[in-house]
Image (cartoon, rainbow, N blue to C red; front, side, top):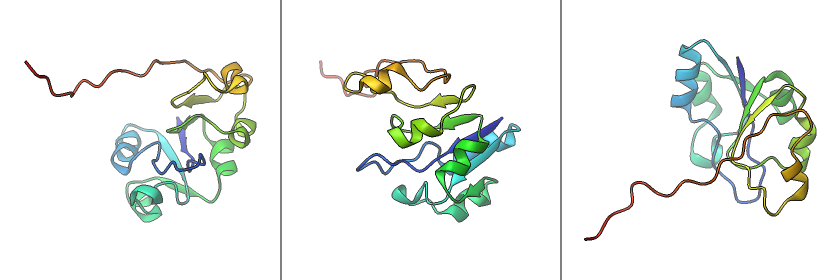
Length: 127
């Protein structure tokens, strides 16, 4: 499967959908991973780091969305990204549907599954 990792475009979002270690595991299991140039810069991962584990670096989001079968993001897709999604493509991300009516309806033809946020399981317990 071709897995795409675009740069997050939501304001003040610096995380990335897949870290290099995850990319390496996916590639070792037979997948191709396409990473947008600069996608990991916000958390200190260079394009060279992704390329070193086998990712293909693409210059812009449109290239990633056009080539990938699965898009992996941290945050909900923004309007420009929704326009790049296509029927049959799978989106793996956190969807915060409550405040955004257009997002709640979902991009046409793109499977989406809403997951509720899970509670912290590593929380310190007091007796």
